[in-house]
Length: 495
Image 1 (spheres, helix red, strand yellow):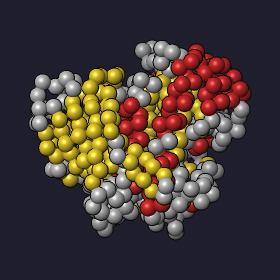
Image 2: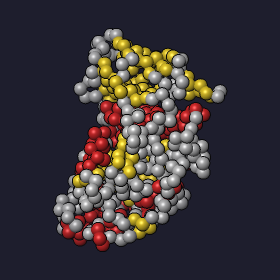
Image 3: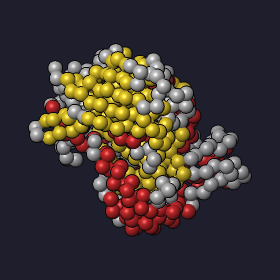
Image 4: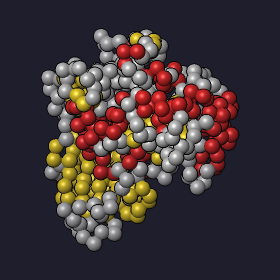
């Protein structure tokens, strides 16, 4: 087996990696909410007030910082009043975006905010601009956050919640260039300015207003929004999905060869271009970087699994997805001066999920394990990484940098380095030089890998791909040399 060599120097602190970069997304889509999070209080599946206990435990272990809801495209057809009050009386609606199924609205505002409390994470709510009114949006904010004596606050109390919730993150629309209304950027900029006016702060609750941003490479959208509405926003979103082929024929989640492995990683690495170019536009209007870039939908998107409802977007999750997650998170960390938040799409049973369920069956995907390895970066100080010489992953005349890296130091002084070897064939020897440390401290590591690029977890074999102790490293006073297997994601802890 080939062995390549890469040298990386780690030195000066560069800013804080917001924990919200490690956020997640739950839409009323397929089996994400119903059967994923929500089974109801009467379900034989162990639950806490209707929410699966196995899901709660797995996500609390990740320390997920934030959860976005109710969409996605669903957000711009969602009317919050349909999802409050006694469940037997809630309106039944058609989920026109995702499979045409009936939405019974049993999971609404109270259930979602209860979920966030159980997970000890912050809610990020996407408001309805596409089919909703400004009054509707204002009433929802008042219902959730007002402590005084008003009809909305009294309605909340009548529905069982005496004290208001704390809601920081609120999105004013979703994908308004597409499923949220097919708007031009100039039109949406004006709509955003109007709608955000009525997203009020009540009492001590201060809302971080997020404007709908661009799809992947639509830099004109960012230009117009920053120019026309920048002063009214706290964050601007962008969406980018890794699609191996075309939107009409995306490719299979499990039946792929090295050509598709390479092109998937190649497209995932284009997140660097997306973040850099949108940030450059934002820098011109906001050089102080007050406005956060919010990558509130990202991940792999393949053809739905054969035999499932194509509107449910159910796909398996392999070692390839783990590498996409690892390199993408390393990119976000490197841009933490502008990237304030990122939310993987989606948490359970949809697209690049962390968790798959089938009735009472439950498993953790390779992507879940990457978030487990990387949680050490949350709210840590980014350390500069300079790649002094780098091996290349070459395939069919094209070339990618073989090693992706990120490093941080936490408040206790421990240094963590995450490394991805994207090469499907060659192992990698990586030498890390850590400037500024008096002497190397104890080093431990964990690695996620498998011999087969299509390796994945199933309900009958749920631990085919899982982390193991990393033992192929050595260290001296200020250097660590580690050997990484092909197709691997690793974390080193230098404590």
